[in-house]
Image 1: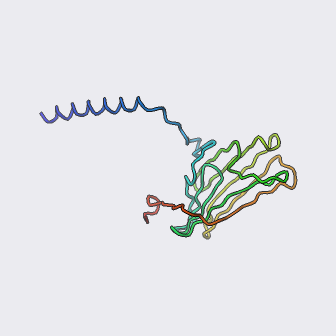
Image 2: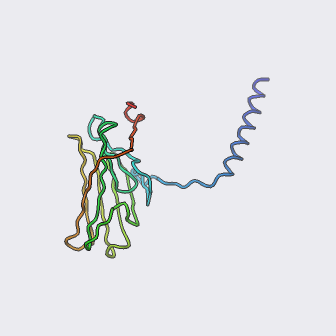
Image 3: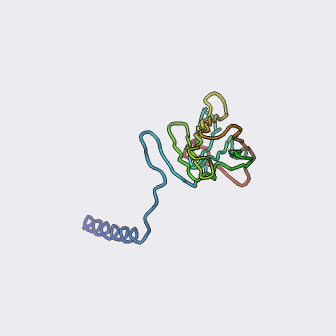
Length: 172
């Protein structure tokens, strides 16, 4: 008798779940695999992938767009933003009209394009956490820009942002 009740309960639960799921709009897929990479195009989420270099708590938080944070403990966090200086104008790289972000085993790469840049111009950016010390390294390649184009990094303290990684390091 108890097996029969369980079976009926399972049927009614499945019917309830399928009805509730059909009422919701289809979910958008933000990340997908491409070979060994996890890819996101024109994402808007901040601090989605932490990069660890050493065995300490320090990490580099990366985002769907090229905005970063360094975290040493809960109260010592820094924000890092990158700006393109082109034609006497300054543009935050997070404002690029096209941004492909990839994560693969300890590094985050970005391919950026923008309608305001010269035709065919793009920025290729790689971010990694150092394995020797609590620091991060970036490599930037500007393709199709005139000479005199620059990248500027601005680092500031974070206010009101708390970074948690309890599942990663078990400290929270």
